[in-house]
Length: 208
Image 1 (spheres, rainbow, N blue to C red):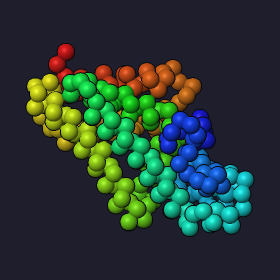
Image 2: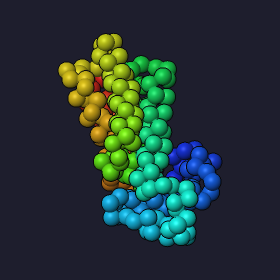
Image 3: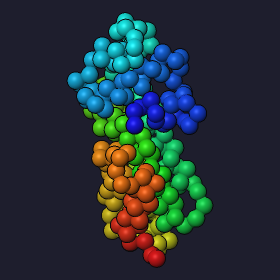
Image 4: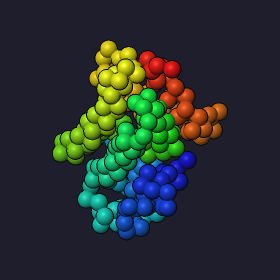
């Protein structure tokens, strides 16, 4: 699945929040190039070529390659936080909401695996200001999951001696799906999400 087929910003159009069309094409090309070659090995000429544009055209929409990465990372992290907060605010027990959070988060990382690899694993390529912004979004995601686990412990649903450490483990499991997921594999994104939700509930000692 290419980045053009992924829909992190909504289902109507891939990267539909990015306008104008030329800026969107460049962003999609950057996602594919960064995922394939890595940020540092990718040049602005590579990105422009994939988008069918001249290198000069790229600078009309993005001042630097790092600005492109920041735009990709910001959209992806905003979406990740939205997914987790929606699950945390849902109805049901802490166990049900944690399972929903994991299913949704894993499904996004599988369905959008090309995008998610860039979003999750190129953080260190960002400049200090942009990196601090993304780190703050990650902290909010961490706090959202930790809040669900805290509620489960307080309600007697979970047995978790180290909530902070367990939260990191849960998020790491989900994020790593983007690194290995293969659309030709034997499990669909929904099936991987269901599997991981069950594994995480076992991890926190959820009461059956």
